[in-house]
Image (cartoon, rainbow over all chains, first blue to last red; front, top):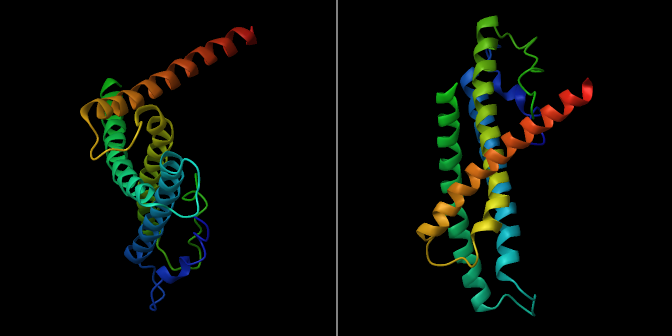
Length: 96
Length: 94
């Protein structure tokens, strides 16, 4: 989230009034970019560990296949974990 | 980014108090979503290693239930440790 505040002024429209919608749009875009970067970085870390045992002269065919599969499974798992966490939060809230 | 809504300064932007409040409210919603996402990333760090052996063509049902249990047991552990730690601190204070 670096530079979060740097573009903030763009949200103000030319009339001198703040455009709340435009600000929120920017915030959402920046968060989406940060989320994508985080996912990419973590996925690379996990899949490198799983798929590249001993780094050789190049990424061989089986390693590339493994990486592709690993990415798909990582995103599947992400969705399952996200749903599980969400339903746990709802259960905890119901208890209160 | 835990306090990015609290130090939001709208002075000089021409924002009315109502607009500022609305913006704060929407930012708080986004902040909560971001916290949720960050927590999911944390769970993934732990549960991926625990539950996935070799990535296959699809996640089988055993792996799926392992992931769900992993999240729930991690939260249970967090609660249990927090409670026990609070007890220890309380005892130590007297």
